[in-house]
Length: 217
Image (cartoon, rainbow, N blue to C red; front, top):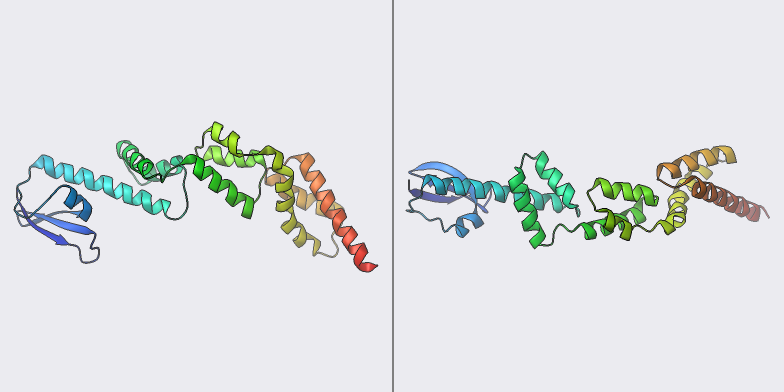
């Protein structure tokens, strides 16, 4: 078998169509063509064709993983599960993860820090809820225990409650029982303990009453 043509794809200049004995064989990443020093007139064996196919499949998996990572940082387990869903073989998944490791694109400690900062800013949750989320994403217990500070739960609960409380308190007819039930349920769904929930709900309610009395005076 002999390579008779290498043609850049019209819609994707990063890919090359390989023709063998005047017949289309397959499309491959241009970098792969360069790495394997493929050229017109080269004689190739069935084993080399299989190697090209294997390397091309692997490169597609790498590209797929890079695209997945382009939206936000991911844990190692998230990348593994994503590639598995896309039908990537276990052998290729391992090689892809090794390549991403070398590029420092999958780092579970960095991912966990990102996840916690994101939660802190946009959706504060209790320590146990945060730990459960990170465990589900494959983060090791040692990393979780190091990064999740349980002592900050009351502050997190306060921040989580404030926006929800404002929307509840805009209801002029709301009483404490209703306020407690709705805000308390909200905080407990976020993973905060009963004791912290009770304190935060009572504190916000009392602060609101004091503000109301001050305005009336």
